[in-house]
Image 1 (spheres, rainbow over the protein chains, first blue to last red):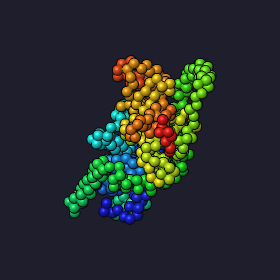
Image 2 (cartoon, chains in turn brown, orange):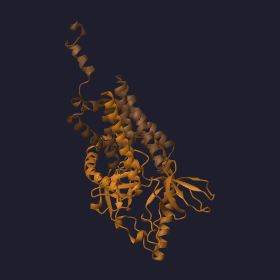
Image 3 (cartoon, rainbow over the protein chains, first blue to last red):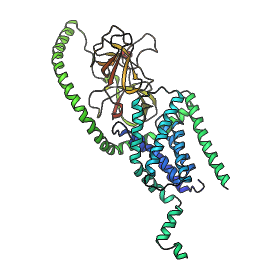
Image 4 (cartoon, rainbow over the protein chains, first blue to last red):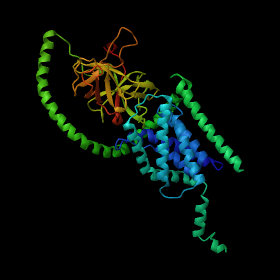
Length: 189
Length: 296
């Protein structure tokens, strides 16, 4: 958060509008096996993983706000669940910094589960009279599976978009320096 | 330094959570014309042209993915369609004689034919721009708004797929801005439609089925009425002397077909119907912008 430059803030703002428009205008209209992908938790989690917990939470709030406004839904619902997803992914990076290739897939699936179940729970608590059924559960599970499948390319695209503005990862810098012969511990010795 | 970072992180998180809870509570408690609803309409006004453009631009991509899903679904539908075709073919032959007889009797009684076309209702065709990805809110956004004569409460019909045939009622206009409108679908739990079977023998109120948004139920069907599986259900277009009671839907708009009857013949019999239009596949809709003869 401290290192959030104007360039990355601008890129995050464009990403926020872009993902909401893409989700509501295209992705949610593509139904495959009775469900459609939900890009919002994936992108929020990706931002959390790349930029940290606070950036992830703020980005989640903004995406949720715009999403509820664009779909004329109860304002604040999506924001709340996206804050949790973004903050959680950011904390995972800050505490564990996982590097495995399957991390996007797992984080994407967990973020989707948090947002979909959290959204449902909040709806129950607000007393919104919506159908609750095996079908709903099936759709939720199918969305989680679908999102887990597309998580890796989505995370890669977000990384590609934010990458030029992100401060360079110290570990990657060290590795690159080592391979180019700059900061090898052996050469220093 | 560490404490300061942790404190700031917690403060920002708390602020965001409290903001969204305040937003949620305020939105939930305020009336439709409240400040947050107005903000939402303002954002919708700004965002809807972008969404409309994006929807048009991304249509080929949607169609490509849709083609895969449709191919899988079509294989299943083909078998059902063939058996239905055989059934309807035999029924059509029987109906032809009835139609001839009907026309003859109408001629004898000098009755006017009820027009089938919807032109008196001034239909406005619009494209579906967005739809909610969740089952919680059954709403879609369409590409026409108040500038095209669309008002809150007007009925909306659609055809499955490309809009060519089998039009059916899908809902009513929920909110409108200049260039777009939000349609609340009949699969939403807050909607009820006065309906009758095509032959007028069964009447009731069509509502979403609790537990399955792709299934509708016909509530309030009398005990003695025999409900047949396969009957077509259309809007009743009821009228009333009280101004607040007439149906907003014109009569004879197709809704769906009865698939089964729960507790048939009992006091609590509940016919279930499958809507003619799958709300998740709608491309175009028609908004009926004019009430005709109080929808009698």
